[in-house]
Length: 133
Image (cartoon, rainbow, N blue to C red):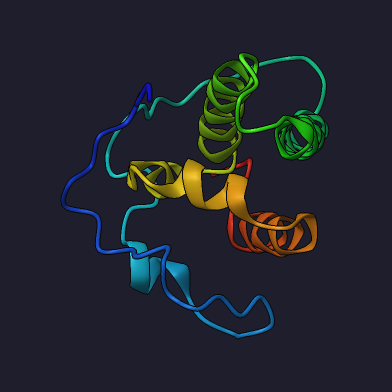
């Protein structure tokens, strides 16, 4: 599985029970949400980053749906998993939550989730992340 961000020192454990309604400060859990990687101040003109994040999230949800429809023996399953990985990493980077991609099992766990659980996970990223830094 490709890995664009390798952070063996991340203290976040995605295996822990997840409660999207819990009021917690992810900075206390994650520290620097991008683990010091891929940071640069940029000025841009274009579609609002919230719009880009929304479309990226929809792509993740659709790739997840396709992956779940593919059988274990499908030759397309590996490609769907890779597409999910790259979409997830870009979405997390866009939302300043790149540290979550450092967990090498996150893609496998998210792909195994039912759609409603994935939605809650993505809702938490949306709530705690920020496209503006």
